[in-house]
Amino acid sequence: MTAQEVRLSGLLLQEHFGDVVEKVGTRLIRSGVLTLRALAYETKLPLDLVKKSLCVLMQHGMCLFGAGRRGPAGPVEYRIISERILHMLRYPRYIYTAKSLYGDTGELIVEEILQRGQMTMSSTVKTVADRLTHNMPEGQSMDYSEVVSAFSRLVETHFLQRCPPTASAGSSSSGAVNTPLPAVKQPTEPEEHPECYKLPYINLTGQGKRRRSSEDGEADQRAAKKAKTDDSECGDEGIYWQVNFQRFHLHFRDQAIISAVSCKLDQTSSEIVRTMLRMSEVTTPAHAAFTQALSANEIFRALPSSYNIARPILDQYLTLLVDDPMEFVGKTGDSGGGMYVVNLHRALANLARATLESVVQERFGSRSARIFRLLLRKRHLEQKQVEDFAMVPAKEAKDMLYTLLSENLVQLQEIPKTPDYAPSRTFYLYTVNQLPTARLLLQHCYKTVGNLIERRLYETKENKRLLEKSQRIEAILASLQATGAEAAQLTEVEEMITAPERQQLESLRHHINKLDSSENQVDETIFLLESYINSTQAAR
Image 1: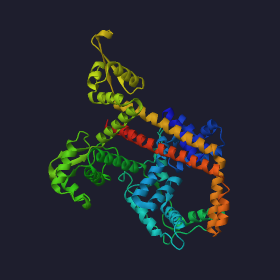
Image 2: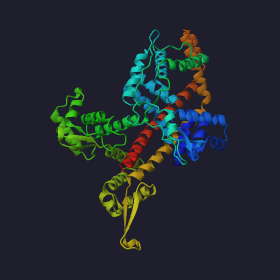
Image 3: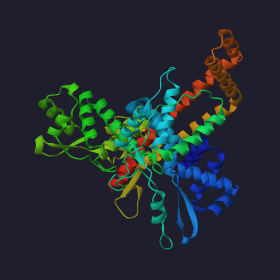
């Protein structure tokens, strides 16, 4: 991992799990593989705290353990899964996607599983039903069957999957000396684990229960312990579920492609591409360069009836998509009215290219962006050619090229006519290598997100006393409202926060909301660049 990725991982661990887990996780990232004793020695933490930290990381699928260099008889070694840590940056996006697809119930299911790492189906259903019931008007409650239905739909569309059994992971690690650690429990294809998306039969009937007192912590603990004992009565004991991050990423990729087609052409074209992606979303491998080939007849039958697209119009749109320079859709045959695929790798390359051009334009201006686009299209150009094609004065073009060169956004290639590399007999060609430039921008994005998180943590720490006071007053108000207090009492409690403090609170919330929004926007850029880099590596 790069220094910026290590820094960002440490900040995410600290924000979600605290300083101790952050210290253990960062040490594992920097050292690679460590035994328990070595980890406790290097972090200078008590062995008990190190064990608990490792349990937290393994519960969330961020840490692996297996036989070390000495084989099965030697001490167990631990290794961090850095990709899973960076996924925490995308948790709000996962939750929002579940809400937009499956409503409030789907949102709470994904939120609960993300918070706890992995859960049984029965425990998730009870917890979500209780939370929904608590927010409903008095006398109404959420039935368990509705939550089970939403959970089933999330599993059917592969947004949730079973956790691989621990025993099989441990047995795969047994072997000779220098056996590598077992593969991380990443989202896998259904054919690799036949029961990965198989729903168990659970004996669960009833409705969610309303929490009567939010202040009674002991009652909450008793309820949690009771839920653990009740799992064995539901028939799904030992079957844990986790979020399939890869499936969410495929959904994000598809949405980015659909949005790009909509901006480039029109809404009807984007709906055709959406239909093609939806028809092949489960059958297309995660790192495939193309979707499964679909005939025009199949696409026509699968189109939403609300669009009323006639068959001749569909053929015209498909021809338009195939002929478009962006090459999002390709034609592979003529059977069935024509066989069409979505060129996923080409689409991601174009999206990454548009991102790079946008960054250059925002940082260095429209003329520099014009030169950058010119080099992307022409591949190799001399300085005089850049001046002529971009229609920029020689002095300005020279300054812009050198600025881009100093930022490593443009590369200079020397092609000598003679072996002595004499300047007078050497061609100096400017070029842009899209993949290294995307990697460079990705590191800048990691640095930016780290700065945003640090600033948010600093703002929260500086106003900690005021935030705690506000939370206490809000809790008192909620308690008084629940008991039917008079308006005069509520007003008196509200006045415990002075006008300057209220103004400071509003300003703080405004700043934190802006920082959160900026994090999400930068994460969208990170996702596009990561997808393009991974797609390019898979294509090779």
